[in-house]
Amino acid sequence: MKFPPHHTFALCAKAADPESRYPWALKHGFALEYTPDPEQLELLPVHTAEFRRRNVPVRYHTRYFGLEFGDARAEYAEAAFDAHRRTLDAMAQVGGEVLTVHAGLSKGVTLNSDMVARNLRRLADHGRALGIAVSLENLRAGPASDPENILRWATSADAAITMDLGHVVSSAQVKGGELKGEEVARAFLPRLLEVHFYGKEEGRHFPLESMASVEHIVEVVLESSCRWWTVELDDTAEALATKSMLEAYLRERGLPSA
Image (cartoon, rainbow, N blue to C red; front, side):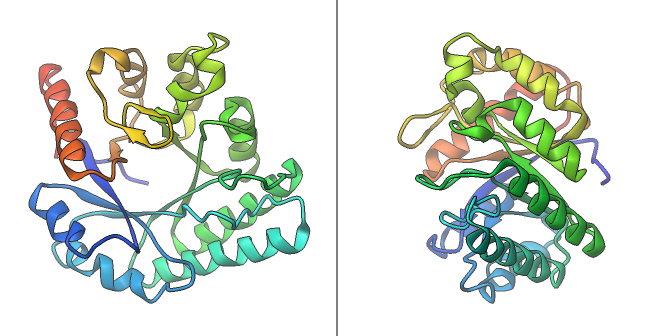
């Protein structure tokens, strides 16, 4: 994976979003982080077409609730693995390079740690065969909120890591003082491929109020070669304000942004 010298700011979007979200993102200088519909993968090339035509980068994100490839029930885990595998195949048809995946996104589903490791490895191997990097995201709660689990699973699969900043600061370990946010970031550094930015998660994603609340984490991120920062906010005004805040932060430090 080649890292550009500048930072890329992406806007999250999903297949069910209004069509207007895509031209808005392009107009305001965003790249795209796209969550497909696993039942309508034929929409993937349609929704990403204009970005690709303009050579604006696109990455992919499987927020597939109910499709847990680490499900303790083997038949459900296999069905979820297949949905992710088909997503990788669809990405390969349009030159996709990075897919962020999750373990434990679905409420009420019991994970089996060995199943997570096994199927993440299968996905990472399939992705590598297609020229796609598979990256595991940390979550706010559950087994994937523990950075040790994320590191163990990612290392065993030789997968990358996507650090969700809102999940870090909203996790019980960090809020309770058991861990510091910068410690989580430093643990992830060797495999860090992208970062998701917003202020906190409490029922929904809230925007950053100021850089002061996360600067101690971002300073660690800046030690890495990771240059892909996704603004994970549905509200476009909040997303644009957060992008502007991040760009100003980088300018103050003399760092280039896209």
